[in-house]
Image (cartoon, rainbow over all chains, first blue to last red; front, side):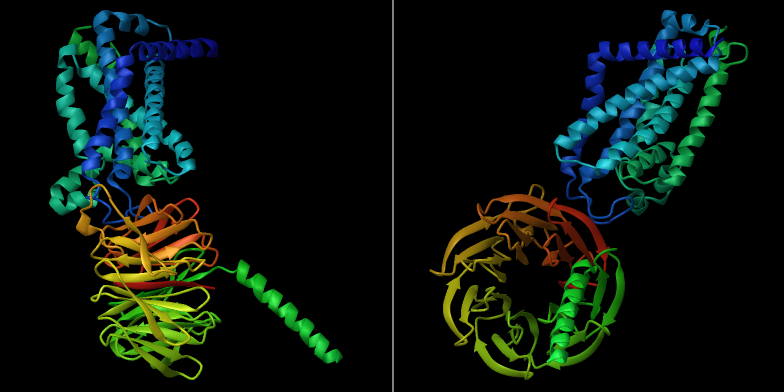
Length: 267
Length: 326
């Protein structure tokens, strides 16, 4: 196997993901509308609620819209990760997964390509969201839009790996609704996406600890700091660490010789 | 002769040096903390508090002397105006202000100080050089706002309870006109050309713009912020850029600064700052505006060109007055 094979494989998977993305215009729209509804409807009602305390990386008072923007970026990537997990289950049911996995290239490589392709798509969605938010007056410093990119790759990979891990344990497409209930909602609501952690602490110490342990909190904080040209070392480290763990398990799970997939589907 | 010439040459060089030094040097921001009885000193470059100096009780209105070497501080509960030497950062003297001084205006000649005595319904005129009271001008109840025209000819005092703007001739020291304005006028500010005076009405929630030629209100500027009740909008401090472009108004518990076009009187934007913002001050070239946020114990820094709040800095309790010096 030469490097050219690897590259062709990567481009193939990327092209397929991109094609899927372009062809499913509703999906793109949905990916944008969801966070925009939060931003322009939900956040507007809470305008006056925040702005009583300054926390890093902010240097002055901010409106609630400005606060939840990074959380909504995380939401876009979270949904995107789940979406690719859904598409993997679909692929498996339709048989196209088999076509992919019979490739002579190592499995971990195929999965990583798939992950990068999904992350790439999520980044397109994020920047489209940021553009619309900008038009509504929710802006970050100019360099923040650039320093955000590497953070988005890391967070996108982590949430993609989570999706991949989940797809390896979901037997059928119908079970996906369960994922929504048991993964997306708790992850999103029990994080710093909607409220700063100190505010959680005011209402419940237990809630605060759950939020602080939630990997999605660290995704949001990594994004939040990067959007202001800063690095939140702890959150970045947690995100990277969780990515490695999820990815390792996902690769293991997708190995028919010993993986979870083989055992569940019976080979 | 030669000595004199070389002396004058030296003086010119020194003056130039001072001038360039002034331009290049970082500015310093002074904030009076009403509850802490202190002045916070902030570096204008790093925007960090570098020193806190204890002063008299309940310091409110503050201002620089004409030579910018002293800070005048209304120590309201000590019934005096204190002088802070900005070099040594120590109190070096007092001025006979009359009881409960709250705000003052300095004549551009640097010699006369006009003080609003909140409890005594007086405006006290102080000769700084002689350190004595020149006159006491009876005005309305609870005088507060003190605005002086840029040529020093006219003084406007607002009385919070009488709801009037009193126009005082600084030569005869007599009131020449009383203009009824909206309830609880807190602040008066002349436009650069002296044609208009902006008076903020804390309870009325608006700005009355008075024509100085006719003593009539020509415009009322109103405010509307989504998510903030009408009662929550209580305008206090006003600052007008000298290029005639922008007017800035502190809206108290609305936690916002209104940005107003000085020509069209349209409100262009509202900038979010800390809690209960009252007083404002520009730096020397008017590129930055500083706000005192009384209830959040901090000041906010606004970039005047971008019209954006760039930072908020924690100071003492209940920051009240603010001024920027070299």
